[in-house]
Amino acid sequence: MFFKSIRFKLLLWYIFFLTITLSIFSVLLYEGFNHFIYGNLEDLLSSRAEGVVDSIKAYWISPQNGRNVKIVPDEENLKNFVTAARDWVEEKREDPELVNVFVRILNAKRECIVSSKLMPPIPLLAQEDFNDILKGEDSFDTVVWTSPDGKNNQFRMYSKPVTEDRKTEYVVHVPARVEMISIALGNLHLISSLLS
Image (cartoon, rainbow, N blue to C red; front, side, top):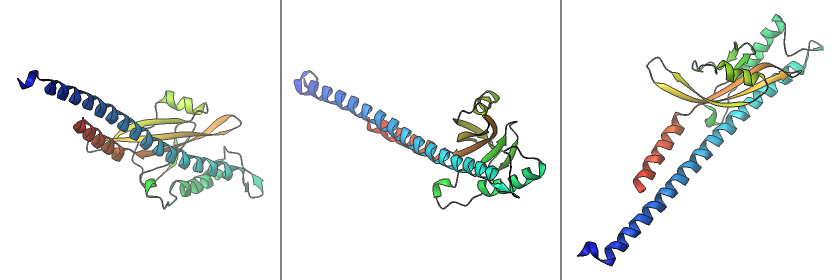
């Protein structure tokens, strides 16, 4: 009797529309939060990379012993550059968001010149992607590094070329861990699934 009543049918329609509404809300909330969190991380990475690129350009343009030094140095200037670059990649920051942000400077041959001391051995980008950066394109990529204990660690990495005379001489990689973001998004997904 109850199952054939108008009250029961209205209850089913109410449950159906409430489920659809909560599902749509959950998807929109998840996508908005995902976009917001990754957008903030990418802004942070690009800001850090821009600072290092500006430091590199300022270093090579500044007078060294009364003369301007080209961005492609000889051996002696390269030693001085590495010393200065080590200060840029190890620069202490007050911002707690920068704790898991690392910096690596590569030459155009994909050889590491200097990197943050505590940076894990994050793999380099594929040669095809690196070639795009050498052409002057910035790039955001997600790379995975497998630790010795077999755990996969995800990093979001921003790559910025340093050019002189339209030729890329260095590439600045600024990766950051995204485990906490993944955990937060996973928890949000679980909560939104339970709501709908």
